Length: 251
Image (cartoon, rainbow, N blue to C red; front, side, top):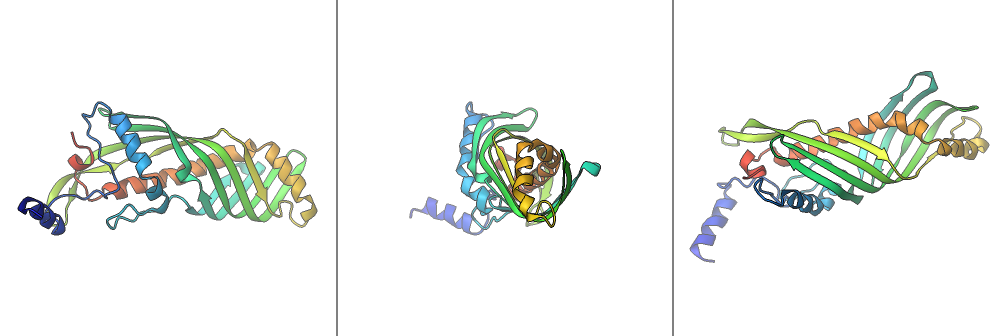
């Protein structure tokens, strides 16, 4: 090892160079004429990291695939009351980026992607009026969906942060991510004990629900949006919490 390389290694070892982004993150320059393509490559490169939450160099954040949801509630008045608890969500790392654009002056990234699948399982309690059926059950549930469209609007703002030495430095803070979802493909529900005390009617009740999945999905989407917005925002800010602005978005 020559002297130049030795100095660089030594500086890195003792933290004298501001390399605070995890090594899994490919940095893109704002002046890059192919900025959008660079960001697409960077996002595709962290597919497994997003799933596990481990971005390397000690940066461990919330895992997205599988993701765990303590509780999601639906309150749509007398026609629908439901609570889903201890849920496991899989499929986040099956994403395919359809479109992406970084609006540099507005500090906003728009991402349109497709999840090949999104699956949920957990416990539920629900009362729902469905045509001539009164659903009133509690137990295990699963939901399987394919071709799920997701639109993300990610905005950031420059902030002042304090580094480990107590010095003030220019940093980055992501605003709450705007998460929109559309279930473009088929969705199948299975809720155990859907008509309480009459297990022989489970298949009939589930088939009726699956013939009209939007009746439940439309009411569930706000809870899904809130959950994923919070998760994506937490992950984005976790990745840049110790980084300088010009490290995250170099010119």
